[in-house]
Image (cartoon, rainbow, N blue to C red; front, side, top):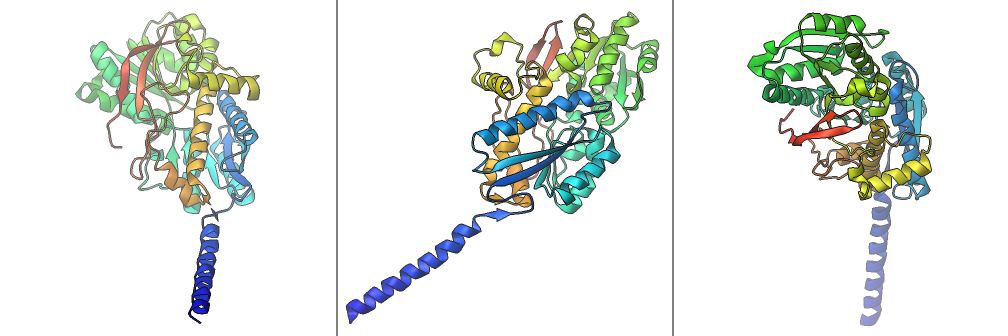
Length: 408
C-alpha cells in the first residue's frame, strides 16, 4: 500500500513538473508584429534618389549584410527581412513610407532611417506607436534623449560633441583663428554650430561669420564667397556629402586657403573628396572612428579581413574603400547584436531594452580602443573620436582617441 502511494505521489509530482515546464518553455517566446518563429521584419527609408542619394550605398550594404546573415542561418534561427523604401531625403515621403512600414508591412522595428530631417519627421509618430526607431542615421541630440523619446536611439556620434571637439582642436592649435561656418539649415547644422560655440566658450567671437543653406539649393557658391569676404581663415562645413564636395571645389576655385574642417557625415573619400578633387581636399580636417580599408595599416586585421570578404561575396559592385559602406557594415553588425541579445523575446520593448544594454561591444571596423556601451539613461552609441587630416590620398591620425565624458 505504501509502495502504491509512493508511486502515485511520484507520478503526480512528475505530471506537475511537466505541466509547469511546457508553459515555461512556451513563455520564453514572445512576439510583437513583425516577428515569428521564422522571421524578423525590419524596415527603413533610404535616399535612393534626391539630394542625399550619396547615402544610398549605406542601405545597399545593410541589405547585403542581412543576406549574409540569412545565408548563415539567420539570427537565432530566424531570417531577417529588411524592407527598404526610397524617401528621396524628403521628410513628407519619409512619413508616408514609415507609416507604410509600420501599418502595412507591420515591421518589428525601424532601423537606420537616414538623415536628420527625415528622422525628425517620424520621431513623434514612432514613439506614439511604441515602435523602435533604432540606430537612426543622425547625430542630432534629440535622438539620444531616452527621457522624452524612449523608442528612439541614434547611431551617429553626437553633432554637439563633434562640434565641441573641433572647438578644442582650434583653441589648442589655432587660437587666433577667424572661423566661418557653413551649416545645413536643420537640426544637423544647428547642432554642429551650437557645439562649436559651446566648445569655444568665452572665445565664441572667433566665429566671424555663419551662413546656412537649404538641402534643396543647387549650389552653396554664394555662401562660400560670403564667408571668404568676412575674413575667415578657418572654414567649418557642417554639411552632408553633396555640399561638402561643392565647398571643397569652390574654395579651390577661388584660390581661398582656409583651414577647412568638414564633419564626419561628409568625410567619405569616394563620395566627397574624390568628386571634389583629391588635390583640392588635401589638408582637410575631420574626425573618424572607423578603420580605413584603403590604409595598409589594417591589411592583417581580422575585422578588416571579414569586411573585405563580405564585400567581395555579397556586394562586389560596392566600393570597399568607401566609409559609407564601412558605416553600413558596422550598423548592420550592431543591429544583429541587438537581435541576438533579444533571444526569443522579440517584442518591441525587448528590442529597446537590449539596445540600451550594450556592454563594450567591439565592431569589426571601429578603431582599436573604441567600443559601444549604452545604458537606459545614456542612448549615445558612439562617444569616442579620432581627429584626422587628409593627406591627398587617405586620412591620417592627429593625436589619440578623444573620449566624450559629457552626459547629454
